Image (tube, rainbow, N blue to C red; front, side):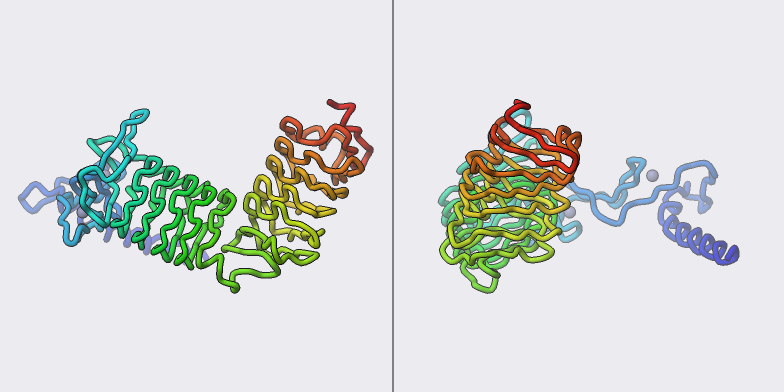
Length: 388
Ligand SMILES: [Zn+2]
Ligand SMILES: [Zn+2]
């Protein structure tokens, strides 16, 4: 065993020395002899390219750059580092020390590349309506510092066939890509946190959608009337899924009992909203970790068993469920949002699978529960009206 360790160590040392050869050769003083200093730092340059508007280079942790050079664009792409040549002439607005793109300005490109920076300042957002109804736009590549895409930013861009999101993008707001009828595929980055309501509504060619397994908030009708939505193969038991997300239930043709597919982790906002009779029961698998706001708002369910790992009940999740009389809450829940159970029947009972003390440790927002609620814990009961 000891010998084995030695061999591994020797192999490791050898491979490090091989990596360092190129650095060491630069230290020479021109005489062929290297100026040796055993305590000096030896550069280790990264494999991948670092880049800015003008040039690319490889980087050592000490700050030293290697192989630095200007971008060499060929068809708008640097043949060395792969950087896309940013579009020129776009219009910008300075907001809180950052640039937002507000429109095409004097730019005539039909393939637009948003830069990472403008005048040395990060470009962090696409403003509301920035490219609204730009029918000549065929592709968009977002710069690496974009965090949000504003309302209707690309709405009605009917020729837009390709969208490349960057790795810092967090928010896509209301109607951002509404009616982009040429768009066939979207793949969201790991950084995405919000896909706003109606954001891809009526993208009638959109048949491939990839959403990372990261508890992204998906709002109502984000993907309604897309080719994906209109394809029966993406629905099961009256419910539409995208990857680990349950998007929405079919309100016209829902069965009495909906059993959510095992392995589903996230229920989108408003997924079962206004779901009516005959549906009285929705069975959630233990794999569920989040349920979006308004998910069951106004629905006809009579009972709900919340899954083991659920931590938050968001605002209005079960509000106006006029038949909901049995609610089973697990001890993992630590937050109940405003109006989460508003206007449920007076005879409702909440069964809490923890202790009275555990219940008091939950964070409640305003009007989280109706005042008449009775909570049954494992070691006693609480009359909610007396605690308020
Ligand atoms: Zn170094
Ligand atoms: Zn380059």
